Image (cartoon, rainbow, N blue to C red):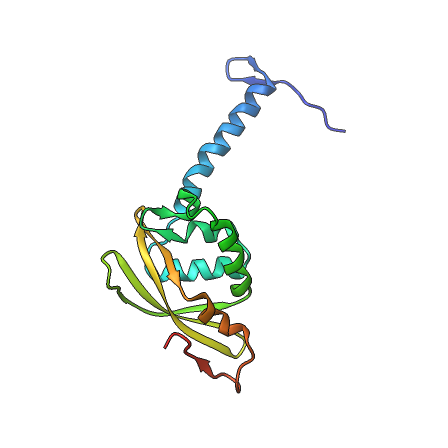
Length: 168
């Protein structure tokens, strides 16, 4: 069995275990806060799309909500739209297990937005479509894409390795 001994601070002053626990908890909170703040932003539009699709493929709904939203901020931050949780679940269902590769990006018609041409794949099936990203809170997040077109990657392919372009 393990026994707890008193902790003696420098100078011979005993320290209560509850003080040690409070310090450990406070240190954990302080150290974790910067990491969570850093992880919510994507550095580039392409990174935003890749991270969003990977989060969906891995069933990480929290990360998806951090990477999807409007110029006012991510759905995780703004809690908008009201049904964003349901939307994350639906998108995740269509994108589960999908691989992603961004092919390029260009400015969108609206200022502060970029279109990212993206290839989604599952086995030999591939779909290419644009994702609109938007600058928010010093980083980039996914603003919109055609979920029905993205879902084409889940349908049986015609021949091995043939790509589809449902966005055209």
